[in-house]
Image (cartoon, rainbow, N blue to C red):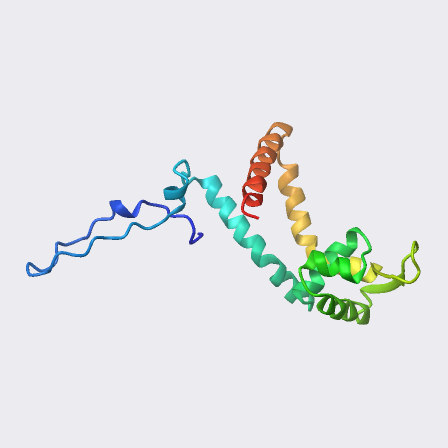
Length: 181
């Protein structure tokens, strides 16, 4: 469960005993800020709990997958991005959110493992692009295969109507996450 949300209103919590008769009156309690105090319509539900769990797990997944593959998280993310399209080292640095020097080190390690190659760009031979190799592609998909298989099984169990509802919910969740970026 997330530390951000609160399952119950703390003002409804009552002490179990009155305490000693000589106890001094307590200082006024400061009201605790919760998701509901800033968004009154926020009602805890099983779907919100599952979404919070998914978001938390998604944040932990890259570290676990990278560790399992003997990669750094930056190497894993680089392989994922490069699987979609070749990029120059500076472009890769931007999508990773790291310096050019750090990106260059990631590329060096991927090249050393045979997962990527540096090639001259077709449109400008003076510039370099990083291309994922078949070895790198196999590595990333092998690491993610259990997740892909399970997601496919879950999705295939849905009817078309259920899929529309799930997609609408997930698109709303995506918009909510983007609202704080």
